[in-house]
Length: 196
Image: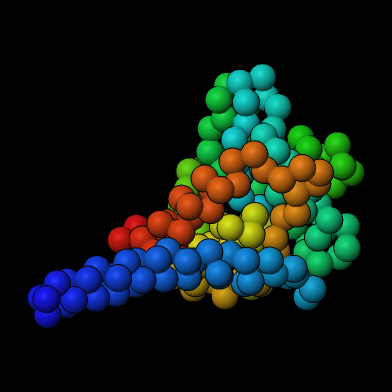
């Protein structure tokens, strides 16, 4: 009977720890992740998302680019750095992002493209190099709330103490939001523990 109780306690304790570890990144996403920039920075790093084969942006990409454009129009940054990788077709994520921004009225000389931001880590490394090359000393990271905590960790590893700005969904909620949040919870721990 005593062994049975001990095993039961160990099971519930382990389950509680695992649930807590899973919920902690979600708590960060829902609190820190919803930060909105209110101080000026030299550059806003806008992270890419999917571009379809016909060159049209995914909802996530459009959200992020428009959030970056808002920052520029409000005078909260001087430059927009669009970082991403290839699209499903001939148009890359950064190219699609530039097109959206230009249509929004952002001048081309205020846009810099990073075509090699294949993931969050590479975007951070490339941003650090571009900060050195351009003399940028302050950065606002622009992405969705679920991605913001991991972006902050990754930028800080590259010596960039960035503020963040959560891209708001204009209209309906992103269709795969629960999947994105679950994936980010795992990725946050991987980045936090230095596994990525």
